[in-house]
Length: 533
Image (cartoon, rainbow, N blue to C red; front, top):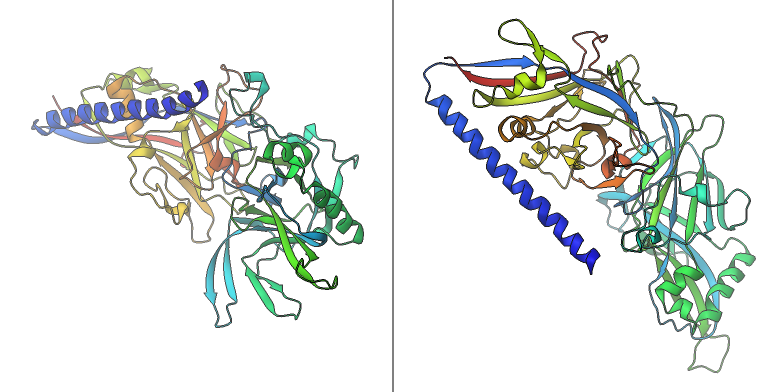
């Protein structure tokens, strides 16, 4: 009960606080605007302010609870190769199985669809598809192995007296002894490549019986021993609680491990986002059983038993070449290294340093800014980051997001932005955070993030100038965060946006350090209106 109440209260508390901020900010903003509009003399100006930016490498990140999962190898031209593997529970879709008389397993097929959209369909029903969220070189194979897991995935964390969800992190395989081959191997392909064509399932006469959207579809019964394995696993347990009780089944069959390995020496490959929660994602066990209405034993009927992937699942990420370390938290960095998955991001500290006031004196930037309360009307404020085109090699992510690291939420400008686009998320919230600006050669030039309302809260409502975090993003509509392992309340970075965890791509930006060429240096600009007294 305590856990349920907390789950309800926390969102309500956030909405109440957020609503208060909006009302307070609007009231103060309108009051100042009214004061200025009633003044005969006023001017509109721009001022640059100093800020600190540096690279921060992430510890392993929580990967259970993600809206989707990644599988494969992605060779980032800037950061090298990363493999994404999966551990997942499977759950029976029927807890009262009746396999009939003398059932005999015929085949076991696994199917997990990619995220895709139909482009066109011919008169015969055959479709072509556009695959969404695929990265890398789809023609480069990698090794895929599927094991029966012996690692129990718990719902609740015993360290919290079973009151909080158990977190599983991107290094979860460190707890599983896969390489000694103590796990049961169910499938292996040394040259696996994804198939983006419609999948056709044929009947006994070779005619198309079923059409499936592109995805991973593999046979888990290549050999007679595999048939016997599934026969012995299921049929004797028809009346056993392991097939009639979810908890018992999760302990009996603890799930599957999809282990991905890059193929040396290139470590190339592709990575796909899998739709494990799709209703068609399953393992289907096809079997035959005797017709109870026939005396002839040669007359059999077809049966099917299936498992879904609706249980706990988590990604394991392995960075094969990633050697980025934490940057200079005192002086800032000349380059900011942003990488998704369990990669790296940038810490942003606004108003870090001095600024020249109206009298030509250098004063504390934050104190100077706060002295403009009731004097400035902030029209617009932006952070602009330029891509280091000498270091960044293609494949830059289209979007970056700016988070309040104290409250683990996007900055308030995100919520003021009404340009939501849930069909095509790359074009969502484009006022708060522009898409990457590209040059005539399609190379990335700059990212711009608006933080007008964030600064209004500091100026008008005395909000804290919190540390901000700049992350790559694959879907700005997903604002939820996941925990980072081995952190304390003293750590600046304690969580990562899930949209960054699901983004394999990375980029390299020029930082705010004074060593950076001025026209490429990251900028913090405020456009404001001020009365002339």
